Length: 226
Ligand code: ADP
Ligand code: ADP
Image 1 (cartoon, helix red, strand yellow):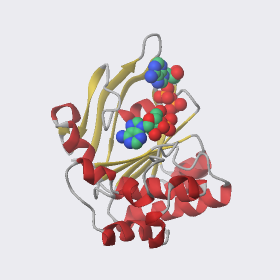
Image 2 (image 1 turned 180 degrees about the vertical axis):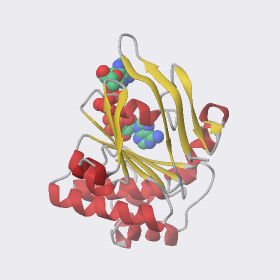
Image 3 (image 1 turned 45 degrees about the vertical axis):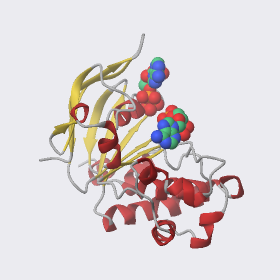
Image 4 (image 1 turned 60 degrees about the horizontal axis):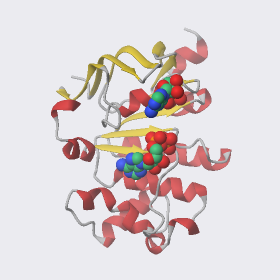
């Protein structure tokens, strides 16, 4: 049974059909990239998984359960989500930002656990007491990844996670995330408009155009056309 499955998922906003009947599945421990031009429906599809968006029709299943049948808090505890714009709370320290997910579910992270999460993303443990505005863009995005991992999710969703970073920082963080995907046995879905990034990091690339999947291939087959 796939960890994640989309069955005939459609989503229309007022005028726009953002996602048009998508059916596909993501296996446990797979790293899938959703690639496509701006407006092709990538973010909308990703957001149906943790119910930031509900489909107009169709079903999204996690481990066989329709996401709509699970309590929202329980669903989101199983999913780490990295936003494009990071969205750290500016008035909270790095450590408090990392601990926010567990705190919402009534669990207090120890200082040691916060330090561990910082180390997972190659930040020093002393960073926990810093404020977001004291950090570089790359450091902030690392904190965004640490925050997404705080609930020990099965599933990691990332929406253009490295889009705003300079190329060197982007490559370093991309590789780190790829290693974490392996080490933590994650199932990962990453939205990107950057095909090179998708080819480098993902096991499988889904290409989206106007709300549909127009290609579903491994990086090898995309690169070598086999
Ligand atoms: P992508 O992530 O590939 O850029 P999106 O899923 O963000 O694509 O958008 C797909 C289409 O849906 C676009 O035409 C976009 O303008 C539209 N859209 C996205 N979000 C909304 C919204 N909240 N309200 C209305 N239209 C939206
Ligand atoms: P992006 O365009 O950065 O992918 P979205 O359009 O998905 O972001 O969301 C809009 C903003 O709402 C984001 O900047 C994000 O910081 C914030 N946001 C929404 N939900 C959450 C959440 N659960 N945790 C943190 N930030 C959130």
